[in-house]
Length: 561
Image 1 (tube, one colour):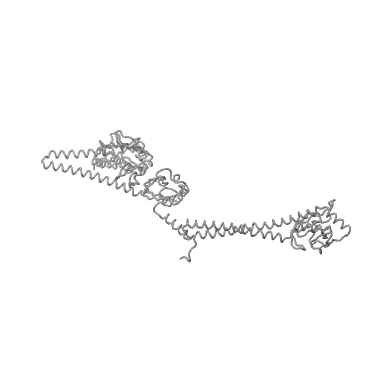
Image 2 (cartoon, helix red, strand yellow):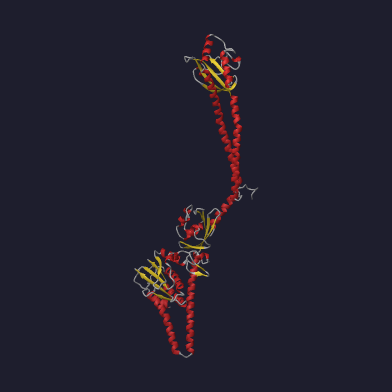
């Protein structure tokens, strides 16, 4: 249980930003004041030195000091040196202007009682001929000082001039700048606080007033949910780059962690799957094929311009659906045969009731001969029992639909198939499509050509008398989701199966191409001699090596049975 209300992320950010702004303002103010104090000290010392240099440059001062020293005079309050020094002090605003002789005795001072006494600080450096600047304590208190040697016309040092600037004035100048500095700092602090507040408000809206603990819990729940889902989830940023792929999506799409940050087309390669995830194909429950898997995808845009796509694996369902379609085909064949047998039995019964026994016997002989001839024609040319049984069943279905299904005269398939089930799937799909296309034409017929080539290759061709496939659609028919079949009022197009509720359409030829390509073969569509469509499949290495043992008779026997 939480004690009290947790602070929101925006509150944490606001407090951190305010602390940062205050700290930076205080630091900048301190860094500004520290060198400012030193700068004011240096300015005061340079000013004192300048006044001392100007005073020492007056030649009469050295002459008066030398004459007084030779005459053994004593400094007096009305002496020329004191008078001149006081005039300069009042004119420059200095705290004092002291003229000393080469012994360090004062000949001028603001306090007359200090005249004739030795200066309070060591004058050795300035009397040695060096300019001196310093902050020091004296008889008048702390001051910024400048000292300059006083020289006679021959350049000999006869004394020195010391000028002091009251340090209280320097401190007052520094203190006078502090309010202005604080005002500027306060303004900067106010602007920073306002910016921090506005940013915190924006952050509060973007985070929906969540606390840090809530965000942590949501992140943990999100990770558990995404990686525990039985559906694949792919998230894209506004630029179409992959920013999240959960475990199921990695399995379904064959992706790894290296896909993160890459454009979806680059990560998946060109194709319908990439087009669906990128949003170039729109609709709900879009069917696509990735490798050997049949996927159903849905894409939802996000508020930031990206998108989240979910993927469901429908491979097993599609396999079961195709098995169901095969079962239905078998049932249709059995129903057609049952219907045909019922008609024959009714005819036979009528002949017997009419006493036409010879005609009845002939009718039975002819009927059995036709059925046997059909089965024998198939098994003589197609020796594989699965494929021949499929063609016999499809013949009955075709007859019921009024379509003639026949084998090409030069068809011959040995009983050496490496993958009979795969070839049955290919033949069944192509024959079903051909029957649909041929039904309703003037003279409906479907021709199947099955033959071995070069001892190991199988060539399959299925031709119909339907409307054919226009040249501009001969590549589109092999894409997932593309179909020319109609369901209800809507006809399928490139996206039709998804939008018209025909998600089960448009996959047969795509899966056939995938199967053929995995086997190293090729499938093409062209124009049949009758004007319809011709689908030609070439499967290399589809026949096992010929060991000299033929399985023709067992296949025929099984087919007749």
